[in-house]
Length: 461
Image 1 (cartoon, rainbow, N blue to C red):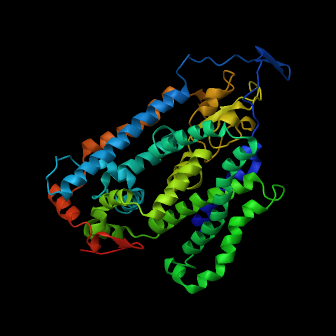
Image 2 (tube, rainbow, N blue to C red):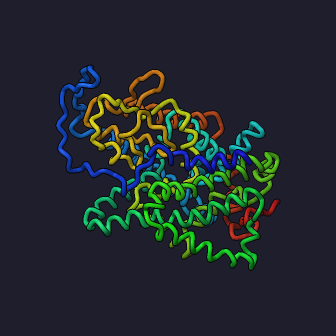
Image 3 (cartoon, rainbow, N blue to C red):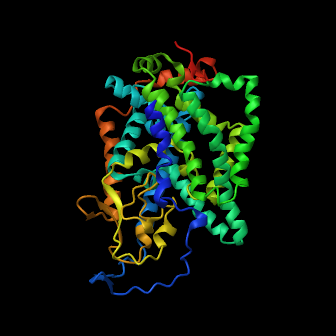
């Protein structure tokens, strides 16, 4: 149980020492004109402050966008190819045959979590969704070495989220200050209120105090007033007693509570032998990717509303999904914290312009840090890109002090990720053991109750 509280407590780590700077606390330096002296006197020493050299067009932002676009196109192609494969199976082979792309298993993160536990418990790779496990394990390894580079350089959801808020910045530039403030702060306040409801519930579930069945009890109505109060509190309390930093920390607790739920229920409590049975004898597991496709093709009204709200909030609040909801972003953030790579600020060369803090998409107060130790840092190089002084801010290897250029970082992080994929492909750990005939048989019968689950309960063949 100590592990549960450690995971939940990590979301509050950055609360101290001004680690996170929110929208209302930022300095606007967009109109500042900076005069950079060639030398600067610091305690009797002369420090050179040269302008950072940059090419006319290419910089870390545009270089990263190229990778984002490439991986987004690959993701769309995989999704479309899988749709055609399912269509072929549904029609009994009446349409053109397209092979099943194993990469679709990247959309089964819970299954990948199960695959990780199965591997740790048995030393074997999940035979049903091996590519999902390989992708997930590759993300964890690259995060350990290169921080959360996957989130900002590869992840298609992160790409959509980033381009959404960049478009939102253009929209907000048309608003007056009051409207701009509320469209930015409203999603955070609402998420904070909802987190004050969900996070304690998840904690109680992990302590076995409540279960899913408890929500069907008439006694649940007794806590409705508390839920309403939790949503109202962030809007009602003044900033003197309810700072933006507290609000943000509570809101981020949501994703860490979800991560804690997965870690405890799957990695800690679920026996590897149970997973062996699920992978071999549970029909749902063999068509989980097809069920996932059906879910997105036939979205319920509730799902449409939730996805739409998250998308709109992501436009007006930077990295809204990644910052407050994504449990896997939380996990790679924790693992990436052990990386030896860090954004390092040279206090002597820094001119305190604040541009790095303003550019940071996750609201880290970079200008106050020596080394950026933060679970939210995406290793996106945005802060380095806007720094006007050469050597004042760079990605470095701690202990060595070696500067890592963004192109080198991308080559290593993305290259290692791709190498893992292809190694699995050529060593037989990429394709599952389900034949085309079995897929056609099961997909034709996909509406059978045995291919569904209810609150985590499955039928066994």
